[in-house]
Length: 186
Image (cartoon, rainbow, N blue to C red; front, top):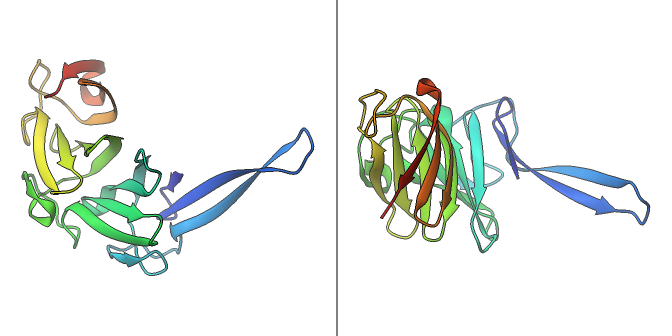
């Protein structure tokens, strides 16, 4: 799965084996894809995104999580039921900076998502923090950085970008500080 940023879509790439040595790639639109950006939950045919930047597939291959950058939210796509909903952040695209449950939480330009176990990790670009979202309770907690405060120290970040989590270790591109951070999470 890939985020097609400019077309506000999520696409699926599949390798098609036609029996030859040449592998063909088939690209299908899973959600979005019209020229109309929007902020709407619902069936894949009706749901809308606005500059989705990254996607992460869970271990069951059923749920795909999307950093919906310009809508300031993280979207959960149920690939089995073909339905999308706001997991955390504003369902109307409102920006902000707050921990909370589901739509009470606020992000400003979430950039990257990563799934490990029961958590989705999201880099909150403009708020200079990394949040952890519990997929069942939808509880959002800041785990790295200081909400809204940028800097370059062990506790401060500046425009965090890509993230990977392995066990209790978080590997983070702290892009505004031109560094890679490695931190431990609980």
